[in-house]
Image (tube, rainbow, N blue to C red; front, top):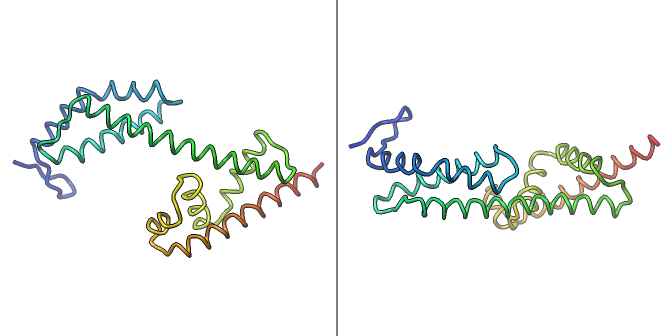
Length: 180
């Protein structure tokens, strides 16, 4: 037996019941797991939602166990991915700040804001390739697959993005020096 959603998709009632039972049994515990390990409630909510998205996908297989242990295994993997992503973003920001310091610029919260402003001023394509490479840690080949372009084009965009970011940071530094 199946239901039809407003999008016309068919939903297996058994699958839905198994998923609903797993969600009801584990949602609060999974949320608390993330809440103890992350810095804010919204991150915990997002990670919890990701666990249950993956659980829904796994529930398509009738033989798939949806016990608390399976859900916590998924939660552990989701948390590891989140931590790796956070570390990459921190490393990107750190390297951008180190680059600023190498240029003899001030550092601190003003530097953080300048880097963020400079990233916001980049062309969307350049910003995307820069963030996918340094923030998300993808290789040129992986970025080319994501953006449906060649690895050579990705390397070229990355080169342009780094150059543009450097110019924006240099312009900001010169602007700050002229105001002194």
